[in-house]
Image 1: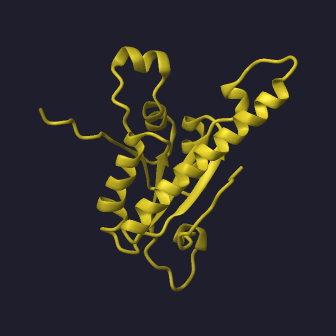
Image 2 (image 1 turned 180 degrees about the horizontal axis):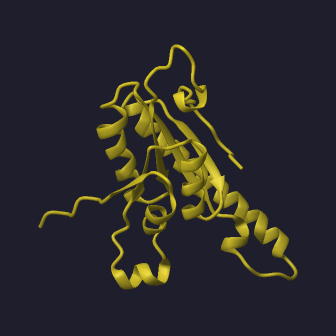
Length: 178
């Protein structure tokens, strides 16, 4: 369920069907963002290299997967309802901050985007968004986990690369120079 939408991108030609004036379809790029610097590096990279470079030939969709309160807190008993309300409020504030930061990146680069907040597990939310928007490219940031940490925590980018119908680009943050 989408919670926040701002600055709708022009409708993708894929939704327009076929007609006599069939124009070249726009490229649809979906970017996953969370509150990490890695995801904003991926968004900035996408805005600079894809969206701005294709000047109107690409639709940009920015998606934030907001965790559900029950995925963050899993206890019952007295006070659980009140705790859940606080958790929900904090998750909502975090999602608003993520959307605001994404919006600022777009405005700074004069790029229009559709921004969605969808409750759920990031790997599923991003794959579903790529499907829903008929994406040609899904862009995600890399947290730079090693093989062992990835095995325990899972990798959103690995999951998306194996389960979505479109190409997936994993944008790595530059390494600090010594």
